[in-house]
Length: 475
Image (spheres, rainbow, N blue to C red):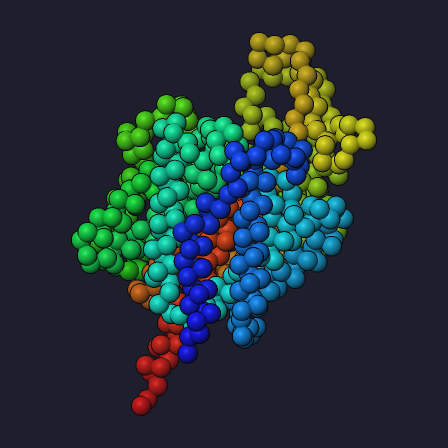
């Protein structure tokens, strides 16, 4: 029997799925309040966008846990998330970092212990609610699709120089399409499942008027994804759509998939670009910098005590670079990411920590003999690289090898259990998310929604297996 509390939490889940990206505190309500960290950008990002999301996630998780009458610890999904949380705690103790960073997480991220506690509690509660309400995933799909479409509309307005979010949060407009997520790559990570859910919902919808509404939302989301020019999300979209089409095997799914992927490339013809956001899919510097970042991440493992089984805490990557700076490698990465002129010649380079300043104040100091048309100039580059831009490497560095394995299983197990089940073809979204995460890292702005999709996939797989076992039992 379903209790009223379960139905209330189901309502919370639906609202969370649609509205979580919009959880912000308008910075415009305040007059330059004190900083959490040391930059004005961090003030806007952390205090007004990230910290409210951490608190909402933690509050939902704690209140939901208190309302639970029974916690199903033996369920593999619950056990996997619990193992991850233990590894977060152990690795945070191993970090040797200031406790404010351990609890809150590194600046610009806030993905520390408090966030992971909220994430795990939320994931477990969502999963148990979904097990008891097997019809809830369909409603959640619609809510997730609606929330992603809202973000797409915001991003397209930003491309048109009509940003309603930036002035609220950070007193100035965003210069690129980000929705309310602060970065095009993060927006792409939210639009990816939105588009795949749109393909699935559109192919299943029998009412013509609803199908047209879904196609409109799908079109807007695809245009917004195109505006981000995020290649990882585009590749993941193609992989997810192919898996969905091959598993579901209907013409509707094929045609809508082609429509969605084609729409991604239509943004330059449909939506003006007055701000001149010019990053292209054909750019090579991003891929080159990824290879260099992955190499740096691999080197960093040797600097973390107990690695690869124990991680170095939520800011492990940056701390390893600060404690033992690889100057030559940092120079090469900075050269690629900032597109130094080809004639740039370095006379001297060193990593410097200002007197009486903390470790994170270190910067890369470079003296150029030649830099374009300039000679004998000096530049300071803050060392802010903190993520390996790969889910597996990031989890490996931060929380250890077992945590990386846990997240691979969480995302891919539902496909292994149900890849021939046409009614669960939408679960290919989890594979698409894993492909996206091969070149990106989890952030608190959209990872809870990704985990909600994973919980839906696990619960749907369990429900399908349970139903088939009942049907096969002789009467």
